[in-house]
Image (cartoon, helix red, strand yellow):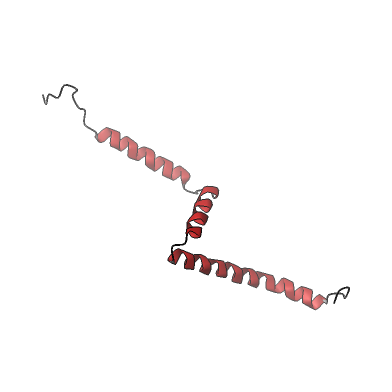
Length: 88
């Protein structure tokens, strides 16, 4: 009914149930995404790409160092080839 004051009990109940409603909503979103992934929907792939683009990678420095070390090992293991084709 418009203009009728809201009971303080209802306001307190609302604030008590917000964390539980949020948890239920997150669980529902998780189940929906799992269902989409199981059925290979493109929406999940697009969402994953956006998440990967915008969220930072916590191991980015470690990944860069690993790639650099792998490149150094690869360049050291390559044998020196003669340009004229002689084995000696």
